[in-house]
Image (cartoon, rainbow, N blue to C red; front, side, top):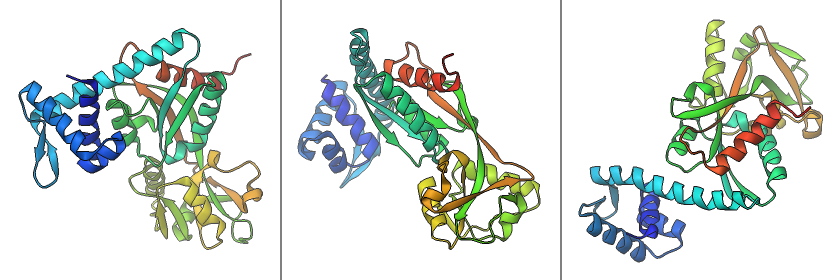
Length: 296
């Protein structure tokens, strides 16, 4: 059994398409398909349901996928452990982030890279908390920033920030005061995150407790899009406070605090709870802890 066979198999399971998996693996589709056929022959079971296109994994394939992901993750962790042992942690750290955690992720990663200058980062944004957890479990992410309600027994996490939702709009809007009562959002031309996002759930629940219901004009999957929409002057957007630059006027917006009640969003840094812990996930964890408890 070759290590590349496992990599190709995991790529097919992830991409759900032989052509895309081949492109992601930098090989031809025929070479990838033949490699997986050899793996099936060695194991003595079919792993992939084939037709005119990829039709999913067989039950045996689903079982093998779990082990293949583990083997690949352990191989990667071994190389990282060696580079860490010689004092120069290198490689690519993969971090998944919910929309409300992008600003915090930037701070954590800045701290991480300042400590480990040979590291490179792949930041995947616009995910739901459940997608972040799924990425950790499939070893496709080293760490993630998410809402704590999505964490589970196999996920280790630390609370790194409690953010607040605010309303942003064009600096030219005369109807945007310094503070807005939560229920007032019901009557405003509001842009918000999509219903599947945890911050949106929290906002909707807070409104429901006040007997109000949001009627958004625009729903998006990123905080960056919300800020861009707010700058047009056509709408106002509900975003995490940390996502707005301190000099809000520099990007053409002003900020209104949401009051009565305030709406808070806790964000945690999550890693897989397996032992021994991979060096990359440990490094991200340590960077986040330094931000939570700065050195005296």
